[in-house]
Amino acid sequence: MSVAIITGASRGLGLALATGLASAGWRLVLDARGAEDLAEAAWNLNAVAVPGDVTQPAHRAALVAAADRLGGADLLVNNAGILGPSPQPALADYPLDALRDVYEVNVVAPLALIQAALPGLRARRGAVVNVTSDAAVEPYPGWGGYGSAKAAVEQANRVLAAEEADVRVWWVDPGDLRTRMHQEAFPGEDISDRPLPSSVVPAFLRLVSDAPPSGRIRLADLREGVPA
Image (cartoon, rainbow, N blue to C red; front, side):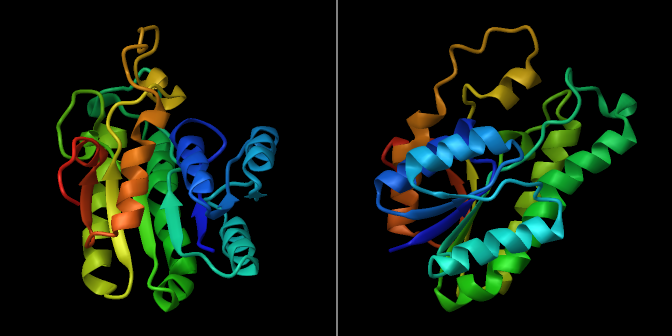
């Protein structure tokens, strides 16, 4: 039975992806900072809950160890992240301490977890999914902090894909979704026109099942039937 580690899995996209994988028969190790919400999600999905902060080395080691007890991770989904200040400031006014936090959570922590999981992923010829955004490739005003962090994630993944012949590396753009983070990006605005995270789960499951070569994946393309 396949095993996945999913970060940021107590709500939003992470919970939707976890629910989809559980329905497909995967065993799951779930991470989030909110222990209560995570415990509820894990209970509903018969998963292992490991609450904590992905920026902490001991927590990352605990996630990998939990997966190893289930037989070892075949898939790592780096979904946990933070937006930064809301409303989002222009780069000219961006608080640098906040920017460091955005990079620590969105860039450094996912790479550190990949490093911890790589020995097992190589052995099982597994895969890494790093959730990205169109803000990584489009210059939206106000998105300089989050967007530049995601751009760093994408370039790091390009290099990782070139270096790791035995591991598939996908940086996955799920599109605009109705999540708490997306609402934080547009405070006071109605985002009810955005689709729910569950809408992209079939495309995500197709990605995992088809296992295309490493690269940038738009889930909208898979949803519309473009070959993986």
